[in-house]
Image (cartoon, rainbow, N blue to C red):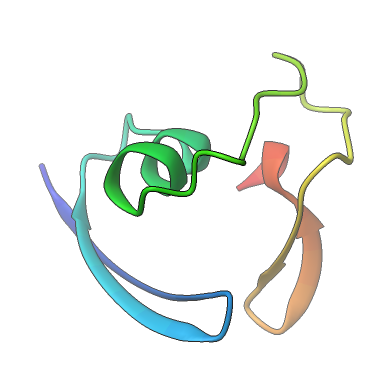
Length: 63
């Protein structure tokens, strides 16, 4: 099942059709061309990437 995702990336509104198994990292790198985004770790306790998620900051590992 594909989900339509609306987000703002670096001040630009973006709408994407995303497979739920696709990570935020994969979306940012592969779909939006933001290759400066790097994988910091594979556990959910890193705070390398901060995202605003529903009006609150959250680390990308939890999104």
